[in-house]
Length: 481
Image (cartoon, rainbow, N blue to C red; front, side, top):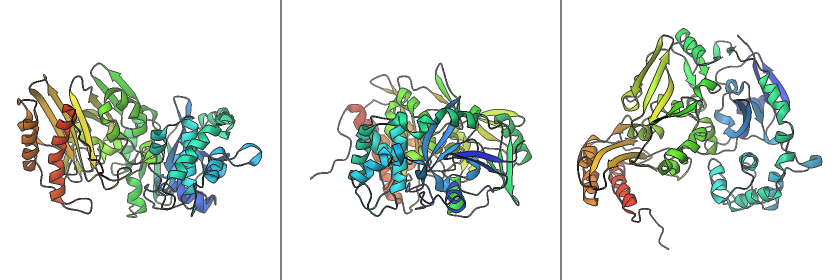
């Protein structure tokens, strides 16, 4: 068992024998290391001013992704390479190509958000040397600027792409050394504390089961895209916290005849290629889960396990008929995703249990769709969401599964609306009947995201939109000039 956190920070190896479960990477960078280029804007993973790159070994390959340092706990950095804006440099000490492009195209005004934009664009520049407009917009989803209107930043992204030079970048030149340094960190359980504030990093999934048996009230932390806010916004005590984002055996993705098995630690970004390959109708929905930094950190298993009524993945998983495997020190059991959600804040998870994997049936010939409405298009919390899986022989609806988020205390299927669809003609009239029937399925609340009346109207309109899409008619709102 280890008692040190070990990671690389830029080109320095860090060893810490004392740290608490609630210590954030952002505070460590700014207060401990005086790397103040990384800013705190929102402290909730929303604005991107704190963006850094995190490199982690996965099957021996070193992969870097932008994440939000404000809600990244320091303990989860064990075995990683953290790269801040101070590490960027060009040849002979000149500006890095991304920095130079931002200067040339006036991508900075007040400058507060600029380091975060630079780091997001740096991540894009390294991963995609020839991005199109869609890739650039996706990379900038999680960064907010109140000055520039974004056009100069987009121009800077294209200019950095044209400048090239990735093979001479420090992360390319030093890759072998960094890989060897991270690989040399022992694969063992690590426990570290500051007083009574404890953080535990299990060795693997089996060790995780043992840790939770020993600490049944522990807080499980994967990507921390939600738990991070418990600390930064609500000052919640999460000790002892068990960090699982590093566990390789929770990151497997396995395709077998008829289904995909997803390890609970798989991030949204890691699963996106499989969404594109097997559920392309849901790709736009998937890319609206948070911003790029959130999708790089947040996990599918964590989104389900947390039990939020406005989580994006449960409606889609429920509509697809997914099941999940729960594990503890004595064994495993399988439950349907829809049965996991018992009531608001209550899930069918026993003390010591954790979500190990999720099993998603392939859609076959079924028609699927997923929709989300929020105040902002990108990087915003859901007001209401819906997912559809409809089987038809071309004339008649054979089966229908429709699940909603944001409409009840838990993610939930629309039983009355499904009944209005099953066995009926595949027609506009049938979906109009379902649009009316869904009013009997939910009694939503009014809050600052949406009123109950608005949510009911959304629920009905999702059925109308699904039909319009399937019939090839125009279905998107357009601004009339």
